[in-house]
Amino acid sequence: MKRSIDSQVRNHDLVSQRRDDIVQAAIRVFRANGFHEATTRMIAREANVTQSNLYNYVRTKGDILYLVCEHLVGLYEEGLAKVLEQHADPHARLIGGLRAILAIMLQHKDELVLLYNETHALAKDDRRQILKSVSRLNGAFQRLIAEYEAAVGPLAVSNRRVAANLMTFVPAIVALRWWDLSTHARWDEIEDQIFAFVLNGIGVSPKTG
Image 1 (tube, rainbow, N blue to C red):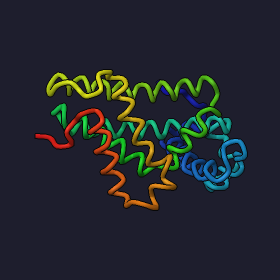
Image 2 (cartoon, one colour):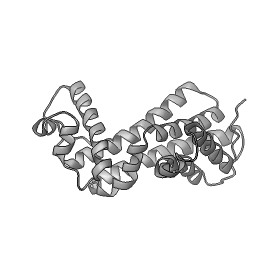
Image 3 (spheres, rainbow, N blue to C red):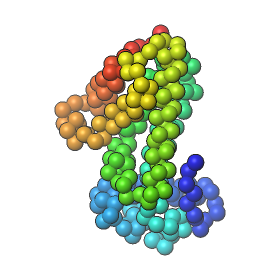
Image 4 (tube, rainbow, N blue to C red):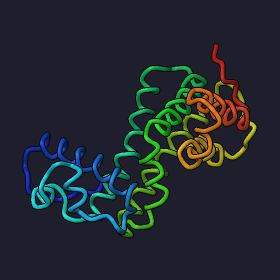
């Protein structure tokens, strides 16, 4: 369950839009200055709102960081949900889920770096909530693995939780080492090779049918 953040505005659609603007602005400000050096004034300026207006949608800088982390985890969950809607075959669902997570990590590298660098700055309860969301994502992959093994056979990695963590964490290298990878390989080459590496490591063919 997501943590509720108080807002002075009652229009749900407006709150959603303004918070999305604030999140995108905060990503840029946090990346440029770090969480601790960034201020709500900087974020408001980047989001093209006044500081007083910003406080109509969030209470603290910590609220904003929580929204940034929640935004990224939500992208993972949405990407996986789309794959599950599109495929019924357990093999296609498993490799499609990995491909979706990898694509999101590539497209949202800055948010991912923030998640890993600044999660410690969250309030204790907020950090626990975000980690629960990450754990929930791992649990979804663990269920996909169980479905795959029931239909196809066991993975090379016997512990399903370990295999699920490999599938959701190893692709993070695209963001955490982008400074090096991007100078030595094309975008599509990086994605394809990480995809193949993870599947080979857990013993899954990249081809269905």
